[in-house]
Image (cartoon, rainbow, N blue to C red; front, top):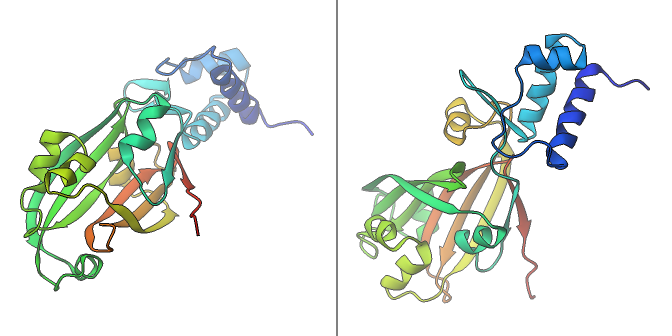
Amino acid sequence: MKHEAWIIIRDEITEDIRAGRLSAGDQLPTETRLAHRFKIGRHSVRRALEALARDGKISIEQGRGTFVAQTPRLTYQIGKRTRLRRNLIPQGVDVTSELISAARIGAPDIVARALLLKSGAPVIESQRITLANDLPVAFGRSYHCAERFPDFSERRDVLGSTTETYRSFGIDDYLRQQTSIYARPAKPDEAKTLKQHPDVPVMVVTAVDATPDGSPISTSHVIWSAARVTFTMEQSDG
């Protein structure tokens, strides 16, 4: 069966990326030049580029052009001890995290239940964005009891990791108590924040971390780019 023209373009560009003929950050020719190269209409070119963008292989930047995606798909393992930097750095990725905002608020009901607090109890809400090789891969909120962790956000920024921040509060180990994951279409502001194609879905990850004795210390709600991260589940011992 003869493939449609746009599929041929999509597959050829995909093969160029796989074979290294196109590298991360390289700019693709304009739609007009691609149409001339493949001797087809610009509509088919546009459809092929849209498909590649949805797959996370290229990035279409308004006013600048179309580029090969900078960051390969990452693997993030969720298990008993889920650690962001430990997951991504061994994959050769430069992981950075930027604080967007921090505030002391009254705990919403869902947060209070997760942290075993009374509804409205004071918590520290931190909003952060995580980048891999300077490309956004996730952003979201985390919550900590304000009485137990009054300056968690400030310490996290100084120490550079959540694990070290907990250690500064006398917590040498913590475990993932609960994780839930589901996929949905990205909202316009989420696609913009993650710098991804509007049709690329996101993965929503809600988690609770606790000390080894089962006392919850944080809960989080994070939006991940489904085009840039694959989640795997660590097999439990029992």
